[in-house]
Amino acid sequence: MKKKVIISVSLLVVIILLHSTPSMALRTHVFFLGYPIAAISSGIIEDKEHNKVDKDKFAELNAKAYTLTNPPIEKATQTKLRNFLVRKFGFLHFAEYYGES
Image (cartoon, rainbow, N blue to C red; front, side, top):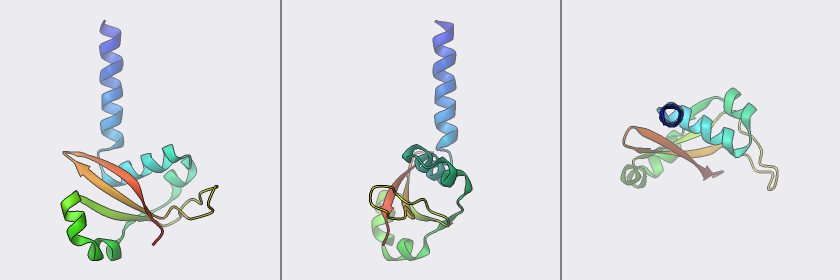
């Protein structure tokens, strides 16, 4: 029983750490998409253009757009995975692909 509790708490701590900031959530998402090198090496900047244009929509979603400076290229469609939306739920952040536009 004690071993299960320790494993559960450890897993919870890791999840919290990986989603504690927008950049960590974005790096975690890119890593699990299958691009570990890009997740570690790419820079992350706030996407001011999307944040300005979609200001009301993002405020409703409690989200911000971010851009990878050195994005990975998806193998199937050969598109750059550049723009991501990071949403905040409580104190945790979760990223999702936003599109190339």
